[in-house]
Length: 546
Picture 1 (cartoon, helix red, strand yellow):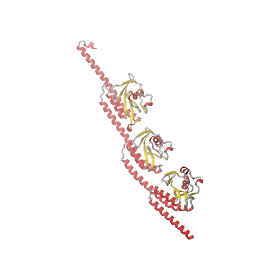
Picture 2 (cartoon, one colour):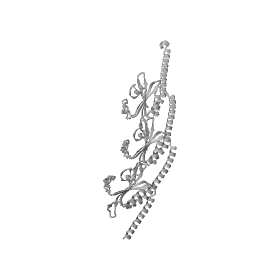
Picture 3 (cartoon, one colour):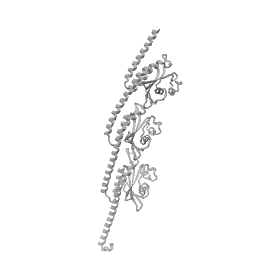
Picture 4 (tube, one colour):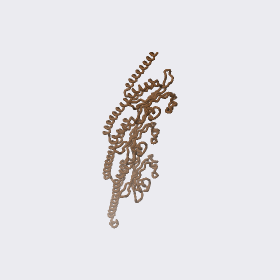
């Protein structure tokens, strides 16, 4: 009998050794694919200890989390101190529970939802060089007759022997991932740095390139870039469809980052009060994870990048500290490029303005200033083009009659009205510009023209044209056109640009008025001369003429 028992023990040990050998081979064949390694550990641990189910929790000490891998290939991240697995991960001690429902650490909500009955649990650490790198949780020991039993001391010993292979495999996989990550990071950074160094100075195209690169770098599903305009206290949001939206500098999560410089990493967007759910509701998209980080140039925040939904195949994951580090390194190049493009565009705008003023001076000097309204139509056209408005009107001030003479584009008949009428009247009497974001919310706006024509006035800028301290005219610009033919508000830059235009227009109008007066005096003199000549020929003499 002893001989038979010894043979049985030897046979059992041989089978275990063979199983360990197969396990080692399987783990080696999984190479450095973490998902495959985890699946192999789950499968072999369950077979080795005759468990009904098995879960594996990778320990992320850096982020204080457990990454749970289950047999249905589901991956879930959770706090490091949660549940029985968290207890084992933090203490490094094995937990063997015969009756799960009698242990306060056991969470029975999964059983309640699925109808499964958890009885016995064996939860053991997988350590490498004294550090817990993972926790295996085996559920419901299945005896040879198919009944549920309890995990025994031999099960613990068998798993400890297996854990060495598992720990080495997980450690090698992790080291490979780190090395591959650093290599990919360096390669990507070098590629992006080269691309950005050769990038266009057009802010919209540069933003599109940054968005695509940031998505690739962090495996994000979506990305938006918000350019910071400190002077206007605005964020210029650049979206993936090349659409551009202006918003207050403190709006939303991006606004929080822009004003504080803090990184915001959100696991569940709908649990954060700063997240605006309206876009998701309108589009049907589901935002889960968000990483929002500042883009710096020196000590100045020049932009904010908002990355949405880190993807792993079809799974949405949370952004990690590694994602933050990678984007931070990338942002160094981005910040310099955005700053360079911004300064270039500002200088280009100044050069364009100077060229425009020079051209305007030349055009006005060459303009015909007769009794017609050719000059006025020219001023209307130039003001509209310069500011980028959809429409423009010019109101000439008649101080003697206390009236405004309204001139419209391509209109031959000016309209006269009291000097205090409407928004143009308010500008004429105050001498101050009036900038309106929503015309229909201003009681001074007369919507009669819109009602008659079907046009829709949205934004409006009324600006004075001043000569020697007196308002001689008012320009009324309607609907500034932005990207994709959208209507945007007029801004401080538009007002300043018109103030530069105003003196040229004022001088031109003054010269035109003097010219017209001289023309009137000349025609009057010519008429008197003709009359005097006629009377002289009739013999009435000069005294009669006088």
